[in-house]
Length: 183
Image 1 (cartoon, rainbow, N blue to C red):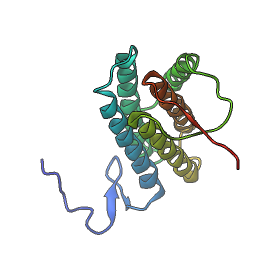
Image 2 (cartoon, one colour):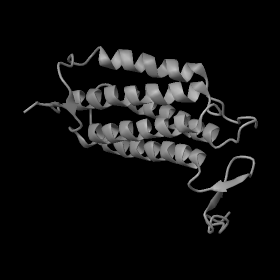
Image 3 (spheres, rainbow, N blue to C red):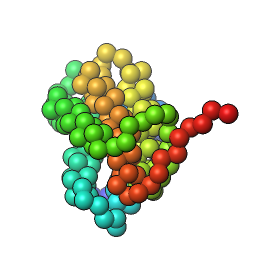
Image 4 (tube, helix red, strand yellow):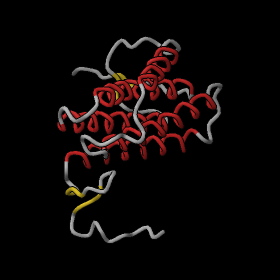
């Protein structure tokens, strides 16, 4: 199988089931943004790889599941309205995120003010991933009623999770949070 097909050379791409749309179509923007977030999460995990902390394996497993689910979210967004979704998102995926948020947040110092995205490269990359997911969520919302409410809930919860995960990794790796100071 060749990597290049030349079918997109004129600014269109295929959705699942083969219908073609412009590369700037709202669906393409939404699933492309999920792919971008997934890549940033992969970058964050590459930074974690050489670090040592007690929950490292748990963190890596959680993010492997998240990256797989985010791929499925992208596939759901790439499925035209009225067609069967091949990798349908389950409510349990949202619940998993909530469980991780609660578990990891319980181990962190309480927030007393806003913090600036920073810290260890893994933590900083997760902050970037969080903002990409928020953009993906906005893109999905702009599509309208053709987007599953579960996709919207997952993206919303994922951005919350990424915020907590960035703080968690920074905390475990001894990185001090930088608070926002009004001047």
